[in-house]
Length: 201
Image (cartoon, rainbow, N blue to C red; front, side):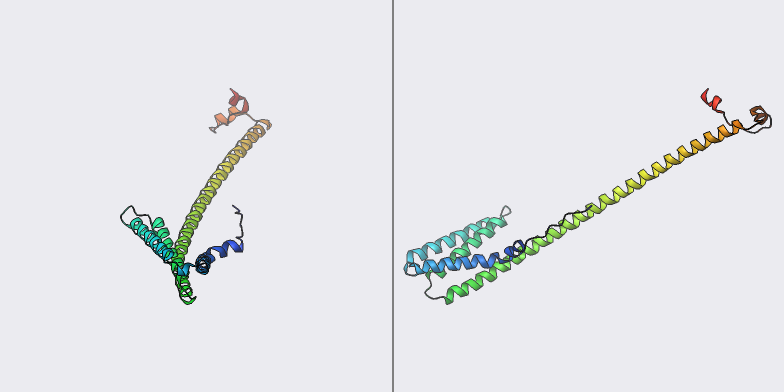
């Protein structure tokens, strides 16, 4: 079976790898824009961001507790908590040193989590491809066996037809021989082949 091979566009390959740094860079840029618009002098905004970050962390902790915990919800909540904390600190800080340091740490942490996800996704994809390949080979083997069996049955039927045709030709040739006497064969003790007339009766 010929499978269509679709080449992935280079953007589709690079985009997932660049997503963590794009996300943290976007947060840093927005935080510095917020800083330029008066965030560093607003204690209320800092308190609000801290409260939102703590609430998101608490939601992540609640979502990860117990047998019914959802890892996706917990991971999303913790990521939101980190993003809010990063935004608050980067927006409230006076200089760029602390925001850049936090950007490096956040980007490193994001890539650490992403690598684990990519490794799991790659392992699952390889397992699926291996399973699919095994199923395909199994089906191909069954198809080959069935094709050989059908070919053997066709050859057997063809050989039987050829034998019947040769037998009929031999009977007709024997009956056309001069001096052919079925009774003489019977008296001599030889088995007599049925003639075409006897076969019809």
